Image (cartoon, rainbow, N blue to C red; front, side, top):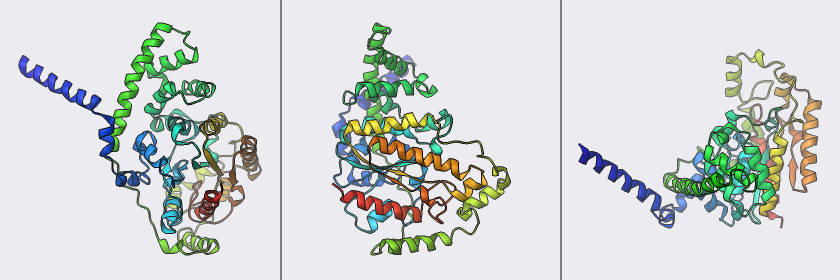
Length: 391
């Protein structure tokens, strides 16, 4: 029994050693271009919480990534990925984002990819519903948080020190980060400039290097087995060889077949609201105000890291469904104040941006309550074309 137990332990140790010390370059060689292409639309945490697949996509000279949240997986014929593919655009797109992702998680991602963002054109979609009174909560932060990115931040020598410290202070406000005693100790040690618990801090820094290496190795192994691509719902004839005006008309026809209610919400989603008792949403947002939120500081971190990296971002400020928000009794005047504030933030940052706030009541611009799609994507596609041609 002792010998069998020792043999099992020895085998486990050997397998662990192989896992840890297998050369990264060999693992990378097994990840094909097809795997990378598939990752562009699978919208999985493997991509946005990892390093390697994003690194490969960002290094493609003609790629223009889109960063945002759940609107990115609203695939239809007019979605930027379908549009770029069907029209043989001079650029390709890939999506980084899913439901619950907001500025701080994107910041971590940008910081981890800083070396690959120099002179890179990217698109960042800003959603109004991020800017709630309490900002991003643990419920949305935890499932979208990347431990790999968080450890990388502590050792990232490319990022401005003051910017890194601002981010670490913010991250320590989340329980997910505080529960990681090693990471918390590293952050506190860094923030104190090595003065707080110096011996423990140095030991934590050494242990953190090993932890980071393990997480990088794990990311590489996971990258060998990417998930299937998202169902694209493509229909190339609606966008290929079509003028902008023709694409808008096609998008309107596409939307009309799917929306037949006064709140301008896709019928299948509207049915769910009705089944959940639509009347309970009446007046549900009358006390909300998107002009006061911790999210603004998180969003500033995003702006600052992209500047620090030398990236070339285009920010897209999208509206809400005006019909739905009227029903929720979030007044249009208050919504307008948010749009104006966001425009002022982007203007002050001296970054290129597009403001779509005047499309709140534009039928089929928003597909449900908040997600851009159909006609909205046509407008976005045009902006991507324009931005790509700019120097």
